[in-house]
Length: 204
Image (tube, rainbow, N blue to C red):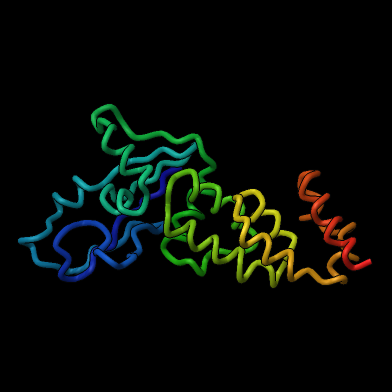
């Protein structure tokens, strides 16, 4: 499977990539149109030279090398060491998870309870700092409104101790009463379950 993902250039941009201080969309599931710009600053040749092939699982992504390097310290280092003449970069990752990561980078509102687990792990692993920050805020502020146990599990997994403690302090007796049927609680390790049960004891 082949996915074409290119940087969308803004009018007046002087080079490919994300403008300083801004976060611009650099990927989509279709080839993006390049916005009009000063030909002295950018050309079709620049676009071709900036394109990088990244094989993720069985899916080939065509990405902007410069934009991806700005978004991810991991890719910046990878591109610096990679010889394009030897073929595309290969990553043994789930391509659907990688696509979700790009989607959230383009728009943090794409983050939800169904993709947060995969996105935050990849953002951490591939050093997408802005995405990881978005995930951290989502875990602290939005996810607890849907499932406080899901938020606590991720806070523990990611060692976000301050967030985890704040979430512990918000747990109500009604939440504890439903623990036995809570799917997120069932996914927790024994140590975290013990912490929760100790907290429950304060209500008794």
